[in-house]
Each structure stands twice: as C-alpha cells, then as structure tokens.
Length: 179
Image 1 (cartoon, helix red, strand yellow):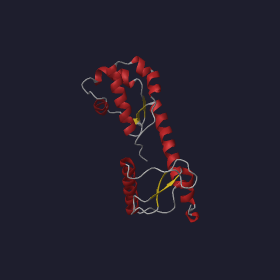
Image 2 (cartoon, helix red, strand yellow):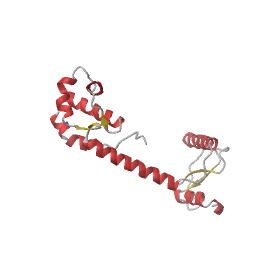
Image 3 (cartoon, rainbow, N blue to C red):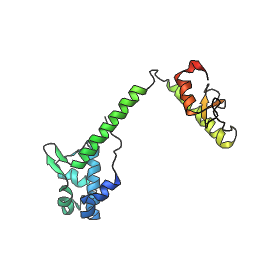
Image 4 (cartoon, one colour):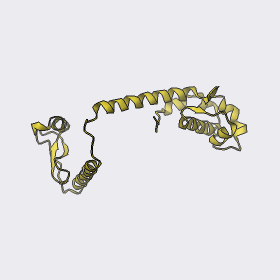
C-alpha cells in the first residue's frame, strides 16, 4: 500500500528540538530528508550521495550533516527516524482502517463507469441550475426539513426530488418504499 499523505501536526514540529535548536538551513535539510524517508517507506539509504542530494543542497551537506543526521538512527536497513516511523505506522493504521470501513460499507453492486459518469454529469448540471436560479431549492418532500437533490433518472438532470439526508438514505436503503 502506498501512502499519499501523512498526518503531521504543526504543533508537533513547533515543539520539537529540531525546530528550536537547528538553523533554518539545517531545518530545511532535515525536513527534506524526512520527506525522502517517507517516500522510501521510512528508511534512508546509508549512501552519502543520496543523502546529500535529498537534503536539498549537496554543496552544503558536509557542513550541516552532523546536526541533521544526529536526529536519525543508523540501522542495518539504513537511516531511520523515530518520530517518522511512529507517524508512518499510525498513517498506515488509519489507511487500513479506512479501507476496511469502505470495503464493509461499500455497495455489493459493482458500479458501471458509464453510470458513474452520467450521475456526476447530472449532479453537476443540477448544481449549476440551482446556482443560476433555474432550479429552486425546496424542503424535503416528506418532512419539510432542509433537503438536497435526488435524481431518479440521470438522463433528466433537471428533474430532481428534494429529500433530507435521513429520507434520502431511507430511499436508497429501501427503494421499494418509494417515499
């Protein structure tokens, strides 16, 4: 699984000794190396050329190396960072949990890409019609609460029903009820 984003809180960075003890140049190289380690799955190779290039300024690497690499630990696999490892593990846990949730709640019907395209086009057309004043937002046709649009037929994007979230969900869960 490839993570495309990490949770990384700015308050964690601002409270870190890397933020308070390093120069701006060292901070930049450090953050670049953390990014490189993240892209490589959490480990940097024990190769000075790679580290120098990844830091952002290979010419200055020898001068800032000690301060920056003092924050990493050399393992048999390469250079690792304790906090990054913890953040990666938590991000993977969250991604796994989210994937598991999506798999358990996903409709068992495999959606046709053409139906998806038509649905998105109908929704877009209807949203633009509301914005232009061609469609007037209405209350829920069942209970009168604030509602959003429901299309019975995506080929007719301006023919919508107004249902509140509860009744919209009920309609999709039990379409035989035909609210």
